[in-house]
Image (tube, rainbow, N blue to C red; front, side, top):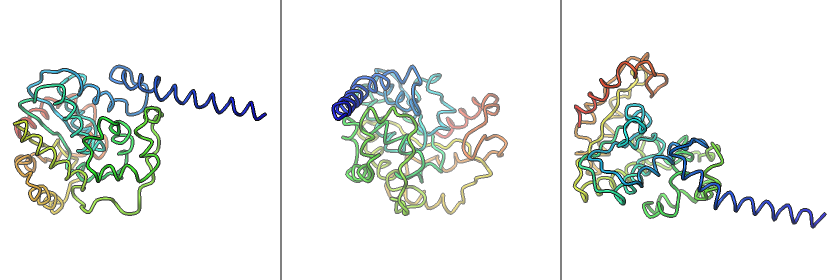
Length: 282
């Protein structure tokens, strides 16, 4: 019986090694062509950012940005979702710049609500930790982010390929208190906004943040917008948002399928209108 269990354990270890070092990396490498596992579209953006391109403009942003600039239709779009955080967008940008000349123009399309997302926010584990927590990317992590990745065994396991492809593993239970000291733009987003600012200046890129239309049923109180603006201004990043606040416009709730995303019918009829509206603000 002991021999049987010993062989069973050995077989399990061999299968785990096979999954971690061969199968999982292979699934990740083809995620830009085949949707094998949950959130694979984010891995596809990571892969695409590492490829050779010659874009004069690139677009980063949240899932509404991805609705407006679908990466399969607009290859210069690397939009993911708000739970990737600005940390994930910074890594995508670094990957792009490591393999390509700096674009002339860099646009971030972000709903105002996504800036408040902190490290323990819903979906951050599957959207940011698993796709972005790799050895190569850790060079772009702040000491604070590295510490946050040690707070739970799931975060620590997220760096291993076998764990990345296990599907939509539930987010770790967040602590009772947010890791962020701010309500309107989280600490992690503000810290990476500063890093984006530094990189943009170094590479002499024209960069602006713009907002897609916002669901009027979930209007953001003006006081909250003012607080967020103050945090961004105090961080020295006001120029990146020079037209952002005026780009925040509200649409009737009937145009949205949820609190954030447009309906398919609305986009079919108004995609170009929404794109033109954003382009007027950058």
